Image (cartoon, rainbow, N blue to C red):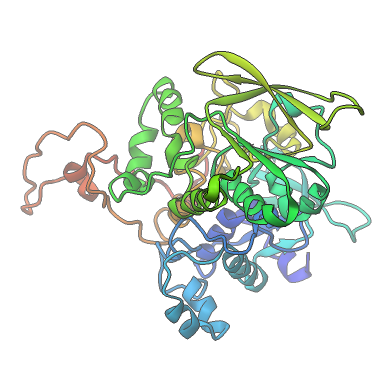
Length: 480
């Protein structure tokens, strides 16, 4: 940390992790008066799902869902500003696509991360402690070129630690050179060379992209393929215009107001919102299978929906394949086996629960399931003695719904956090805009003296829960 940066302590906001969501917060905080912020990342540079930056893949959200545009389209950190900086505006104009290449999104984010003055790479946060006497968080930070850890102080924290790959229990002891998560696919793909049979487990967008990549290469590799998923079908992502309104701030506010048992029952039923496959990828897979079957030939690909893998074994050196998957068809409750040589696990991600929070673990209020309690301003519930606030990003699927990991809501969530931090002095938050009324309609309101309907932020028109005003960060204690 440079002397000039150290002079900013205590920081008003210290961010842990620099994925797209904390990077969005850093970009929107840039230039906000009287907010001294720093964002720390242990990696040496910005990297966004490098194992899945495959040729031809695009974002599943329009380019307007960049780091800032849906809150501040005039920001110098917008994707259009990135294009102008790199003399690519006319090329993008003639590209004529709403969904930009995934590799370009990664490059755009890296450009923002390198240019912002508040980002610090190569800085690993080892521990967070609360000091009631000073009403500050003490954050222990270490770096690869530092002989000893250093301590930074901050009034408030925001955790943007991202998610980590999920490995199903059946594969816990089988991971190795030829059993790996799709998060590592780009770097590990060469390990599949020589495998006569490859199985993909999981049917979200990542699983579909991996399967499509293997299917394209099948004529040259000669590999037999299998694709197994627990979901009832290889189904498209919900992409209807009204359906997508479940990724609006209006729906987030509605969902947050539900009781927790209802939330827990709702999310699994929305699997096509976040586990579905885009229509283009499904179409390409079908077309490839169709073409391979011309003339009565075998497509040499086994697609198995509604199937779980319950155990993995190694049949032995004299067996034709290296691995045997014991599977169960979930609707028929029938067992069968799939023999394969390699497995790519496209089995999703889960929020990280880092050890850096252990020193304050006793001060966090968790729900009966051991999950964070997160309020409507993305603050963790804490003990009364913690007057600083701990915000979270993409760790609140259980409290805020399926929009938690969605890039389209990233800038809005960051703006809500800044709004809470500054008492409404950062960015204008949009009023309710969804055409769908997600909750029961509000009863008619008496007209106010000025002739309006008296409803704050248009809440009566949409049934949305309005954002309530809060005290600015100097007041402290609002995170409980």
